[in-house]
Length: 387
Image (cartoon, rainbow, N blue to C red):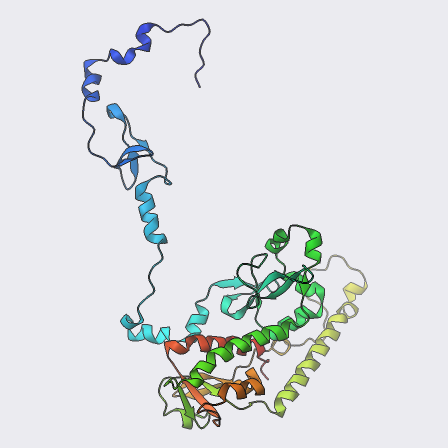
């Protein structure tokens, strides 16, 4: 920054210096400026290497334009930010049509989100979304599934947790467990620690989520059973001999219960495994000699005490999903009796041509994708560990 020197005066010639130019500078100052697009905010512009620059008088060096005001940059950004039209299914290739009719592809295509408790990053279709909603009677924030809330009444960003019923039973068992679902954004939105302490977790949260999923599936499937649609075909059973003659089989809807006495034995065995695991976890400090001697720094060669441990696949077995074989492929089998309950299942088929049927087949079609996605979410929520 230049500073004026006190006592120094500018001469008249220095003030009116632009009136006494040399012939060379006067020649360039009289050249006409070429036709350039002019913005009312920044003046005439011209393109220079994929960007816009401001044209100055007297052939001076052009000035660069910031990207926020550059029309070339703005037009290129609008081209990429503009919402692209939905693809036309009528113009799909055979492979694209098959992929578009696959519900598992749609489930895996959902955005990946992380569970704040287990830190598992999986597609959001397999997560349960929770929100904070004010109780109209007590004015306390309640944690409820997103299906119960509206888009304008939630108080914080959504929280997504693993969509397993057993996981929500574990969250409901202790306050310290479900408190882990409250993220930093949720705490900031509540604005005060006193308000955060008033957050209520419903004791019937697992049953509430199950009810919402069943209600959504009932509304989806009722339309297919009431309307005479070629996407639902009656069959005798889920065996390969009965379904191989049907084309485009996507899944099988079993209208009877698929449970047996073996399921009760499996539930009791898993309860026994959990009990043994809890006892082992409590006795680790007594079985570890270094923990008894209060050794603070363990040796590098120390790999832990030598005592029996449960195998990982027995402690956390994979979930069991019933399937059937159709023309060399595996298709899902959903028991509506077990998923929806006896009353809802009877209400679903009441007054339809499938009222006395034992098994029906749902064909692969873009109209049935949403229903199959909902069935897969409910099956994942109530799935039991494999035997």
